[in-house]
Image 1 (cartoon, rainbow, N blue to C red):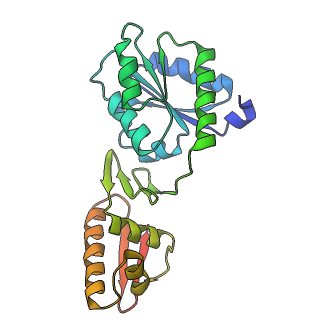
Image 2: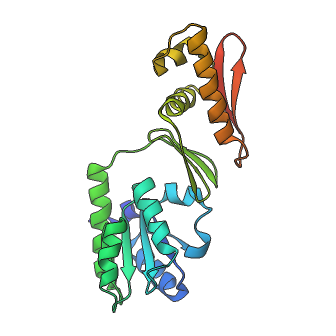
Length: 235
């Protein structure tokens, strides 16, 4: 089990529409030394930076198996690989199986035993540190972030998947922020020839990527330096 000093650096997301439960969980986590970040589950979806900042999440799905909480659980566990501890209603054992199927790392039924909650959380975080890689996440603003490792752009509650070629270009540009990446380097990375045919294919890929980025909060510009290559400008 981690010391209280170590826990103070760990942000735990608590998501529920039950304000009484949220207050109880916040008190339990704070007394154990964790740094809880509590949000109403109905207001969670547009806060992308909250997802990335959370080392673990506690999600109350309540008694309703159609609750928005299930989408949050899937989003966190599948897209962000966040270990999720799910709280279900005591009289709904069927929801435990559903939670595990959707992506929960552990499940507790109400009423929640504070000591068991902390022990489960410690175990989840220990497993994550032992087995999970650290993904290079680039947070542009509170509603826009880029996962360069998996080729995903998160905008509010929308996930934009990049094609393999778009993914390669984004990784190259992110690793060379404010530096021009020569078009020959980009063509080679994409497995294209460095002749006119390859350059035309590169331009088409860049054009598609620009369209996917257009209209997002925060400015992400793929700037062409004529005759040289491209650079990424993020503000």
